[in-house]
Amino acid sequence: MKCRFAVLLLLIGPLWCVAQTSDQPASNDKPASPGAQQRREGRGLRQGVAGTIGEIKPDGFTVKTMEGKTVTVKITSDTRFSKDRQPAKLADFKPGDMVMVGGEPAGEDTWTARFVGSRQGMGQGNMQALREGMGKQFIAGEVKAIDGTKLTIARPEGQTQTIEVDESTSFHKGRDSITLPDIKVGDRVFGRGQLNSAGVFVPTTFNVGDMRIMMGGERKQAPPAK
Image (cartoon, rainbow, N blue to C red; front, side, top):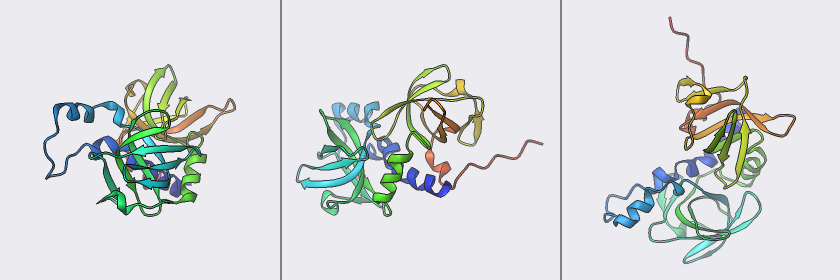
């Protein structure tokens, strides 16, 4: 289960970091215009879709998402591409490739991509596991609202889900233990858990920050202070 959770976090990772990754200009890039810089600093870039590439055109491509919906992805001169953590271009992708797209909504079922990424090992089986497990076995996304013990999470694939923590939930930020009041709207979070009898996801572990600390499985508890 820990291995499968780590693989799924690998799939989510590009979307998680899309704002930080896609907004860093290359060393030979020209300085961004004020308008472009303002857009790059916008919080709306931390969202996107994941799925399988369908038709590819010079100005973009279609993606069949994890929800089984076909969306159109538009690319611009600012769109950055990555394969296996290396810079790439649209021509390096082909129909059937699994990709993560980060960017901005541009109409119904349409996205303007700021980042398109793919990693070795992304496959239909992993995507299926991601579809089945997200919101049921694990959660990841940005906190949009907090109402007592209920938190509304905007998930990487564009869905919004309300979860609920309880007395069994352990909270962490990096290596530090925290409490529910330490979590704020806008925090990016992730964790694992399960659905309760009412069908609401309840995390057993809930983490604020970089998902990579979970890549090796459950975070080891720090030894008690002497």
